Length: 167
Image 1: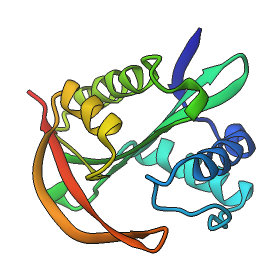
Image 2 (image 1 turned 180 degrees about the horizontal axis):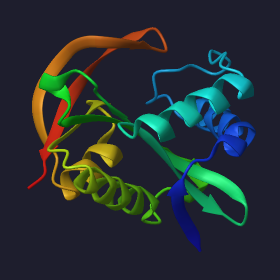
Image 3 (image 1 turned 180 degrees about the vertical axis):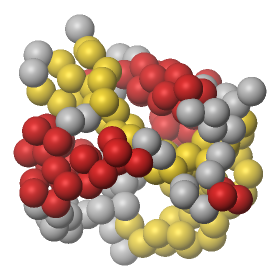
């Protein structure tokens, strides 16, 4: 059983462990293994600030006391962009295909609707078919393609920008 919940400042160490795990498992994320340098103290500060500002959040998927996925939603404070939310999501490889991504998206949509947000958007590498299928299932559409957006294993890859508008 997986529980989806907002992250808390005391979760910083467990969150860092999750980030390291997904960085090591996936070539679809922007960070390469060992590239993250944010400390637990810095994450605690950022998580506390998110809770106070209420424009951003991190939702974690927890299984038997261990984080197995997350969805980070970054909101904007600029008035003309305040209705938007940029998403980054990852699920540990051992837990992929079990509906955790779907649960994370459902939870972030509820969070966004409570705050009267209107636009959710994200970026995804064009060869990441499993994630694209999830995003399309959740109602996201491709808005554009960014050529050579990332350099992965010595090869340039394109990214799609995908978005979903909430009622």
